[in-house]
Image 1: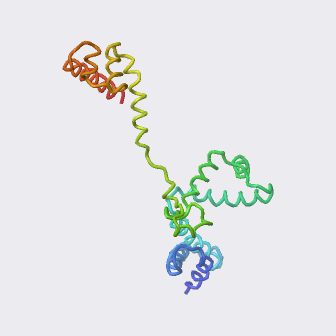
Image 2 (image 1 turned 180 degrees about the horizontal axis):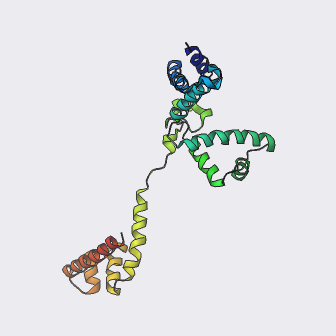
Image 3 (image 1 turned 180 degrees about the vertical axis):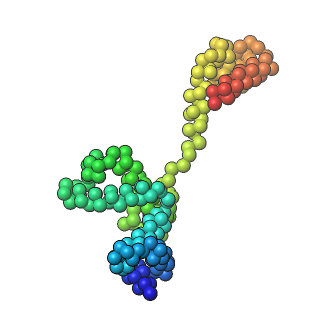
Length: 226
């Protein structure tokens, strides 16, 4: 008898771009059922006036829970709406984009909450990595234009070497003078073990044993540091 109320309320959400009308009507019907369960004749309120807020509320909840590309807490979903309204109001008043501080004062919340809400709002929609970096130049895609995937950062393999060198430096300082000299000749000057032995007046085998001991000490120190 009251499904017409659901269809009427669902019509307001026809162009929201998430879900077809059948889904929206089904969700609205859940709101109608809740209204029927909670309706009290003794309050002398028309059922229509009582039911519509339940139906609309259920549909809004549906969009709120399914429209976001990345799930964020409901508090932040609601904050996104408040921020959008405040930005529009303050932009018209100030004739410029409001700052985080101005938004916080307008909403009566902390600046950190505004920042959190702005960051969370980025999860409302998601774009393809194949999209052009400049949407105005989408025609370049077929002509070798850059996409977001082309400009994404990636791990730099040299970073691990830099970190290892920083960890290694104090361990080298703890070595004796001869051990540091052997390390410098072998890895800094790239001398062979035979050349090192000749310069130090020791055999190549002795150099090999010394290098093994020194590297073992450094390796143990690196593992301890980790």
